[in-house]
Length: 228
Image (cartoon, rainbow, N blue to C red; front, side):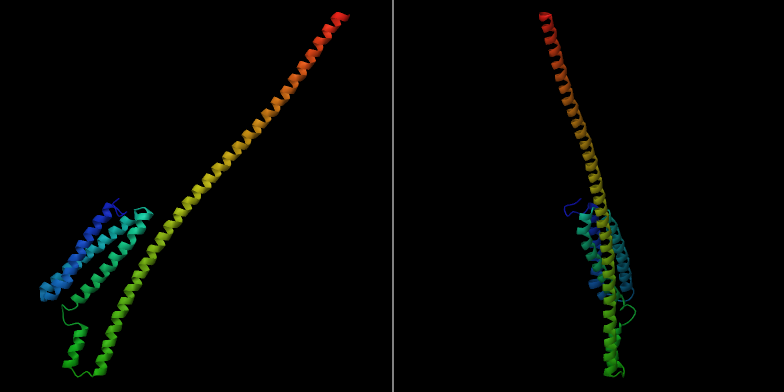
């Protein structure tokens, strides 16, 4: 375990992911905008390979989390969700950047149409609203996928908590059964002691009676010897 409550392996995955994510971000924001043609395509392909690598790293991080105790798991899962959101954003940014490789984007075509075609302003405005709606729909779909993933993770956590509660309940029941068994032994011991006490009292009475009878016999014998 490391100082953050995770594991050394998880920390190593984090470092690997951060390096790959930084490389992807640099390609999207710095390298691709300055390139064109085949070099630009090559850079995009390299970024796509790094995204695949980052996805694999996150999958390994998730496996490692589920091998950790619940306390560490609960602390690390929000960080994993943050990394997934970051990677999803990088994918969207790369997609927008790569869409300009083979020609102008829809917005660029729209702007060029405003100056180079006979589209009227109403058609341009309608197309712009359509593109905006499409982008919002894509963002909403992504948020829905994130919410679904969070719900699944929450369900897994809930199942683990229920399993812990079940184990604790079994331990409590076993402890209760042990106490009940101990109580039964104590009751038996108490009954045995009471029986022994009663027998000892009876024996003392019998002993006293025997002594009295013997003393009476002795007195009678002595009396008979002197007076007969």
